Each structure stands twice: as C-alpha cells, then as structure tokens.
Length: 69
Image 1 (tube, rainbow, N blue to C red):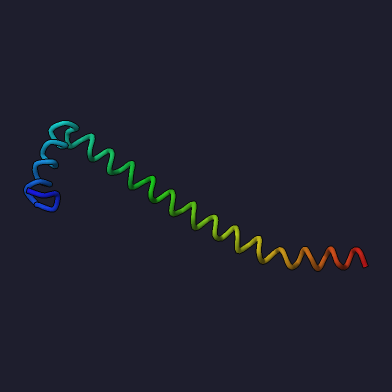
Image 2 (tube, one colour; image 1 turned 45 degrees about the horizontal axis):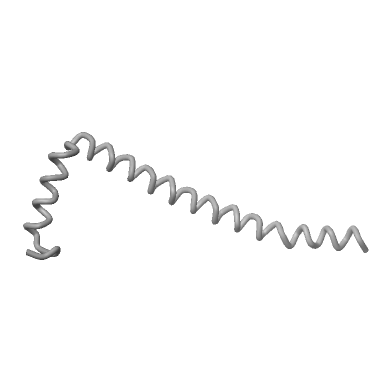
C-alpha cells in the first residue's frame, strides 16, 4: 500500500474528519478560500498601481525638464 493508493488516502481522510470534525474543516476551507481571494485581489491591485505609476513617470520627467530649462 503506497502513498498513491486510494485506500491509503481514504483512511487518512477518515482519521482527519474524526479528529477535527466536519464543521471545523468547513470553516478552514472557507478561511483558506477567503485568503486566496484576498491574495489575488491584492496582486491585481498592485499590478494596477504599477501601471498607473509607470504611466505617470514620463509625465513627471517632462515637467521636471521644463522647469529646469
């Protein structure tokens, strides 16, 4: 009976459910899903902020060149 055997994983699943209970496992699943969602949202907001900063950067350089000349 190796690690890839379905019976092995079934026994592990039963033991985990007996130890933690279905309610706690359901809450852990919701918390994990919420964390992944927030992480992806943060990545998207960060990339949008980078794009905005990159778009504003040339405009700032042109303003600085105009003031010094």
